[in-house]
Length: 387
Image 1 (cartoon, rainbow, N blue to C red):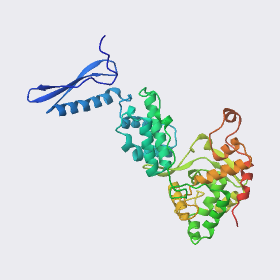
Image 2: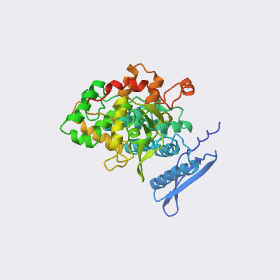
Image 3: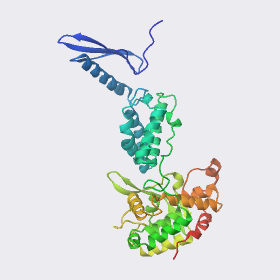
């Protein structure tokens, strides 16, 4: 029986030979991706240097010959580069692309970049992600898991892996005190919303919160349940006072080299929506429109676009050392969803109001996603702010 052929993209045993000038030649056979086996050799001043130089040449050869091909021996850094390129060319929102790019660079690169594809097993990935969870938080770990799953999914598509090990990875929750800490995001109830509004309007820092627009901003988040970037992207042309409707048609992002801008679409196609809002929320917007000196509904202090990240920081600072510590703008989104569910709205109506895309085929085909009736506004009518 003949010797079995080398797998594609691999080499045989490396042998070293002494040559003239007291140098050494390291030589091996490499099976290229066209199926042909070719000799590859390099020279060094010692056996070790000759072998190291040859191994480096083989790695370079794999990249040069394979191009975008991925094998089980390809380094994770190379696969991640391909995946991030695909991500950049996709239709995903700019902020999503940036989030996953940062997750790779900040949390994953140092941990897995030098590993080969086949070395990223379930246990290795679990250990890496739990380390990220414990040091950077659950949110960072979830983003890292999405990225790692995408990178290894690309490897599966290239036949470098039989299946994606990330399917079996469970991050879990860190063992810590049940009290709210700086990294814990609170769940906001209707009762807590009342206290939060009172805190922002009557505390010793109330005048500062008013200058930062936090009371009105909190009111609108609790009326709309929208994403913070969607709220800050609203200009006055999107508000129809007569009908008490808002057209949510974009989100604020920060693009590298450009700065803040309004992205002309939301996180998903379902997010492009017109909603009828509670009457009390419409009154708030009418008041603000009479006082407005800029096109934006919630501008920055200089009248320009407002930064979502800075707004989140302002909100966190406003509730530091209070029972609302850990409050995130998404808490209002969950609150609105809960209220609408309690009011008996269908999953379709709630999805339309919040701009979610989780709907059935029948609902997608036969129901109008671009406009919503008054049920959501009616359900939110009784959480009008005091005064």
